[in-house]
Image (cartoon, rainbow, N blue to C red; front, top):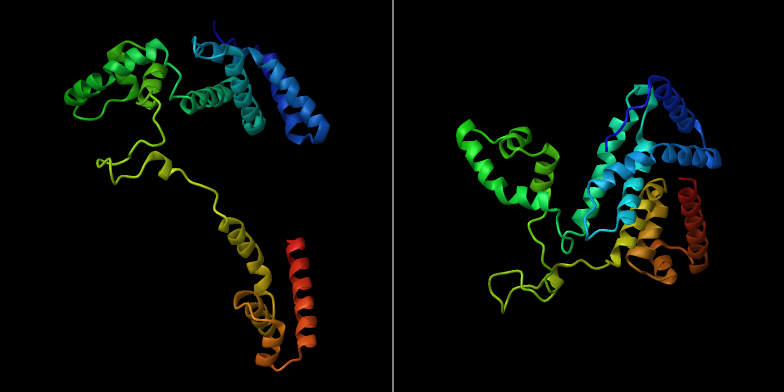
Length: 257
């Protein structure tokens, strides 16, 4: 099965459709996107069909391909006058390949990729000696008599196809090494605090020196209002009013930003 390039008149209509989509908003934009997706459904099914194997559900693979199609639609610039099929194909393929990479630990590779991968290292070494440099994908494909896409898949696919326990040691010493579980990140409760501090920084910079000192003593040094009053020479009531004013000013500044 091959991708048929639209006649010139249809290609012009497609560009007009993309121009309408680029300027549309809301419901109209959603409807135009649905129309474009329907128009290029065959492209997604054709690309997905090239990657189908017994370990993968075809419908699921096509859904991944449609995600790539939508991304391509949103990125396509009709003013460049390029062919949308040529533009969208790498994006759809990229999403499908990413899907396989995410499942690489338990999905069996297509036989043609397995076969190519098995002889790729030998071919690379041979051509490197002959050419005096690293071979290109095209040269490797010619040497192995396969398509360049298969060579690319074989080069980028993960070398590991077995599941490992989270208790597997990551070092040479089984007694002292960290396990895989130790290398997995966990939520950092200070991230939200960091983001809040970064967000409020511009607003703090606009305060007077006295107001910044007030905020620093209250929230960084965690002093009470009475302690702040003693240090700055104000009554506790006056400190309370100043804090309320400054906090209100900061809140308004962050809402406007």
